[in-house]
Image (cartoon, rainbow, N blue to C red; front, side, top):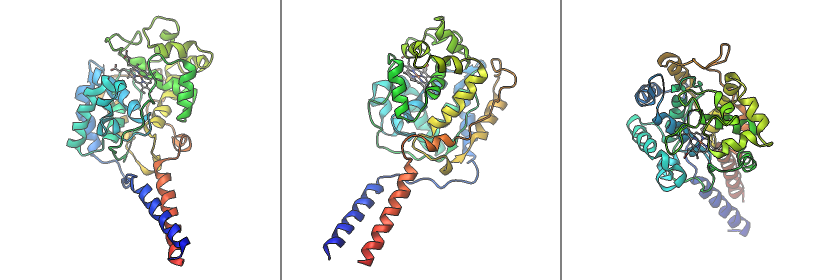
Length: 326
Ligand code: HEM
């Protein structure tokens, strides 16, 4: 064989090997699989109590962040044991176990189930928003990189820089941190003054010192880097919702292209409107159920897994044509 043929053949083999580690993408379905209605009904029993969300729901909301943020929303927090092996996940081992079992019994991916449980968890809280949910993520048993999660004492500048590196704006960072409105500290004490309510009052109570937040939130409310966004997102329930819902969607799509997934958001809005007593903190005229177009999710951040697959396929095809031509 000519030496150039050998080089090309070697490149072709390398390309194929490199991309063989990528996981297959489920075929996009024309409608949302009905199993998600069953999963919603099942989760409701442990996520809702006395008209608001439970500790299990809190853990599920936080779990979505911890599965996605280190790399992609790929279920690895459960399937690659990040939950049990990494200190930052130690408060979520219970929900990891529960969702791991449900993923088997309902035959859905852990990656999807984690995002679905977070959306149901948020909708379970008094005043909780209706966020979107897209199905079709596949699981991996390869762990996401370590050292990516922010700690409780991180300062605002470092937090902005970390979130920027993952493609998130300051407003999105501040909005997502608003999930702490229903959060509890390690010792069980509430992070804000109305822990049962998913409400914008969190922002004000952190700013004025009446809440008991983690330092990272306190720093964001004070810092010249993030104070404007803090006050603007927290100005009202509507401004909180308008910032939180698209930011949550963007986070839930880390590593995925929305165009390849199936829109199951109706299940979340159906759950929110049909099964829950909420709205006590939602202002009239707010757009419950509205979700962003989500285009940002596919435009920002690093290349998606699907983009990698497409690029690999093209490279492999071109190499094969050249080899056969030689
Ligand atoms: C922005 C950077 C963030 C930092 C530094 C952070 C840090 C923390 C820490 C340290 C705790 C536990 C508190 C304790 O141990 O005393 C916690 C709890 C929590 N976090 Fe975050 N978090 C961040 C963002 C997020 C995001 C994006 C979400 C979800 C959208 C989220 C949802 C939660 C929830 C729901 C809890 C309460 C869990 C429970 O009560 O069991 N966090 N967070």
